[in-house]
Image 1 (cartoon, rainbow, N blue to C red):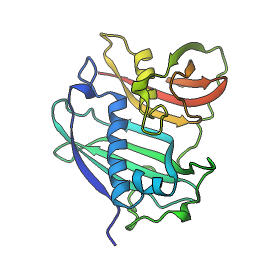
Image 2: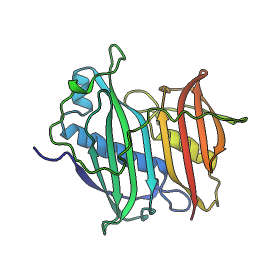
Image 3: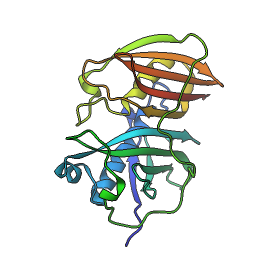
Image 4: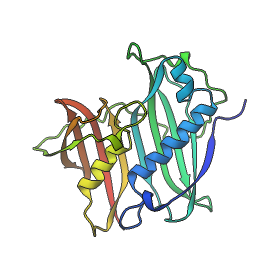
Length: 244
């Protein structure tokens, strides 16, 4: 069987960058999500195949680290591959490179499959991939389910109402859109900085017109965010910034 790895070129265009022509964190996760979806379909475990069983993919955790900023108005190459399965969880890695093969961004995500009837988790042995797992890894440690953030002081709060443009085809807030909220909170026009690292854990789904109350504090030179819907934890996020 063939090794389960997929590569695709992406063009970094205007919608993917900010006022400094620096890549948006949401654009990074969009690339990851698009290529993962295409690859899953090729492996026989895509959106349409799972819907026939009344199953759906749900992302629990995502992380990326920018080593070098992708060039604006140029092509980049993204590679993705699933890691060997755990009992319930499915990890997938990503590596974005420039045209010369130089490393730009490394990332990883952690997924589960849910039964849409029972809302319970589906064991990984119920799903068969068409291929052999790739053994190369940028992230040897097991993915997290939660960040377990625990502020020691008072958090600064703000809120966000989920809009139609935030939703995915499951009717929930798309995973990449949470970083849009954080980007808009952290960044002001003229700032010469960018989001270099991000870790985000998705705890509870947010739906149309939900009000997400978001707490923010700083820990170990990182920006920490906790989001709540109806007083229940919705997401946790850790952001690392760098200057241009």
